[in-house]
Every structure is written in structure tokens, then in C-alpha cells.
Length: 298
Image (cartoon, rainbow, N blue to C red; front, top):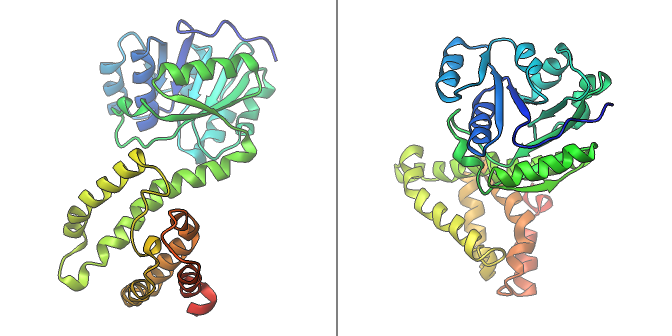
């Protein structure tokens, strides 16, 4: 592997397969004073959109064209396509190739490394609902990884310059890191969906129930931010309300067996955090734990 060129705000950068994440990242890089020289997208309408927002950058259909112009290349495709894209391109020494996937090991880019490029990963712990979501990169954590020390130093600086903070990670740690992210985001949204469906016996459909639950959700997130854990947890598991838990299990099981099992599994897995508040006796804790146990619910 050849040494990398100096990495700073003047280093030419390309963003390959620029969808929602890549487009947002490219705009954030420019906003932070970095030099984005090229982006690629296979969609003509999206290339026109990118050209209107990234003045001075080459907007190409070909990923190879974009990669040829840069010293640092971000591959921002969906996880399942990253290896395919990397394997299909010609790389060179004095070049760094990065993916932005949360769960994939950096070895996914080994075909670039075999051609002399430095490889690494930088994953923003955030969702991007549109290609114009560059503001969402501020105040987030960036999981960074690279064996090349110069590249790792640059990723630390980049995360800070984008308004976030770096978290160094190893490839073997990525599944746990990404599972945590999914639990706090995708599965959380699914859990709220189940909560909204519990309103059906009241004659209120899921969409309407969601609107009514959102203020409670916002208050809970604010409490997590301001008070932290365990104080943000409320409800029967903090108070040791055994009979309330029994009624909840009956109600969630009446909705569906899956909902009942989800309620019990989540409650059981987080019961130790609720207990940290000190408001539940050992007797009530053990009673609730027994109620939630899969062995007692079959």
C-alpha cells in the first residue's frame, strides 16, 4: 500500500452511488469546506438534482468516472451493493476508499486494498429520509474504522468538522453496534406501531392513535436526553405494580400472541434498568420477572 496524499479540506473527494445518504453527505462535506469534485448516480433525474446543488462538482452516471477524479472515495450504496460496486471498479494507490455501512466489515472493500488503496468505514448514526438531509449529520456519532493511521486521523477530524463526534470501532464490533442502532430506531418505530394498534378496541385506527401517542413519545425522548437512564423509565415496572403488569399481558395477548410476546420480552429485557430507580421491592421484582418469563407464559 502506497502512502496517502495529504488529507485535508482540499483533498479531492468523490461520492459514489449517491442516494439519500450519499447526497446528504456530499452537501454536508461542501458545507464544511471540503472539496467534492465528483458524485455518481445512475438516475438521470437525480443527477440533475445533484448538479443543481453541488456547484463545481462533476455529476456522472459512471461510478468509475467519479472515482477516477478523487483521492478519497465514499461508496454510499445500500449495503448489499457495496462489495459489488467496489469489486467492479479500478482503484489505485494513493487513494482511500470508504463505505458508510454500519454492519459491514471494512474487508468488504478488500478488492480496493489489493490494488493498493487504503480502506475504511465511516457510519453516521442517523437516518436520512431524503437526499436533502445534510442538516441531520450535525450532533451525531460517526463510527469510524481504518488500519491506515493517516486515514483514521482524517476520519476523526472529518466527523468533528461535520458537527458530530467520532467513535472508533472494529469490524468485529459492528454487528452489536448496528443492532443497537436498529433497536433504537427501526424497532422503536415498529414498537410504536404496535402501541398504536392497541387502540383498535377503542374504535381508533392506527394513524389516529399514532398522532395521539406522539406527544408522549416526544416527552419520553426529552426525558431520555435531559434525565437519562434509569430516570426516564416510567410505568408499572418502576413502581412494582404486579397487577397492572398482569392486566397488560392480558390486553397485549388479546391483541395478538406476537404483541403479547413482544411486550413481555421487552419488559423482561429492560426490567433491570427500571429496578435501578429503587422503587420496586425484591418481592415485586421477582413476581414481575416470573410473569414475564417465557417459561411461565407458554
